[in-house]
Image 1: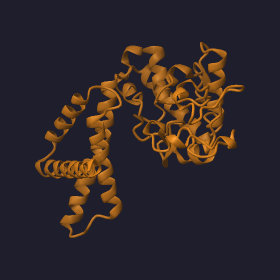
Image 2: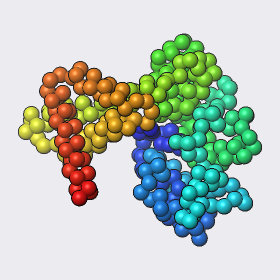
Image 3: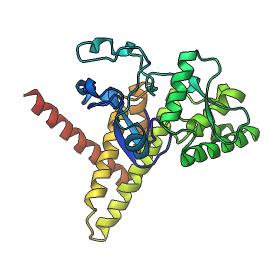
Image 4: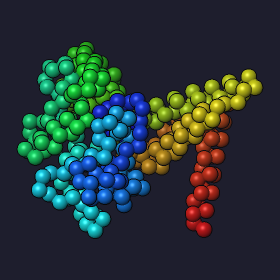
Length: 290
């Protein structure tokens, strides 16, 4: 869903796995004990940069004043909890956040059409994650907005559509520009899925080729390289079987097309990696079944 960008600020560096609802004590309510029953729930995970995860959000999870926080006993009503933080998988963030028209400083503001409660939530999220005060985040967003505005003025729609893919850094800036001038050019879920696969595939085939070069020089790849290789294969297997949007059969077909385009040696090496990972998954699944 995210590719490799922070769910909160849009940066693509130093990512952690963040528990959206903290699994331990909560800053605003230490007596609550945290949402410990969601510690291993994948829907409670987001990728977040180290600044957002460790320095800004930490164990914070505010709810609206005078409302009840969900507990284990009331966990069935968690979707009704009056949380303040925006959930990138559930909330229409692109409709709630915008940039001032012509404001090249990259300042995010709540959409004027929101209700008072929604505006308050959006502003709280902006403040907590420093989306306007962090100079790196705002500076990169400002540059993304400038590039998008320039591309729109020059009618470079393909370039702008690529920048607006949801897993691209600061894609919100490009999407806002497209919404204003050419909403028909916004990328579809299918296009976003293929672009994410393209990015992962490029990294995979580059690393496979480099490891082949190591071995040709009688050098063994490092454990870090081997781990990255497994992670890339695993990411593509997940996308093939359960894409964040679009038809799984379409993702599988597209991966097959990419594989066919590779030269024989690269194709053979990548196919072997996929088969090895799938065998390992089958063994794990069989072990748990027993």
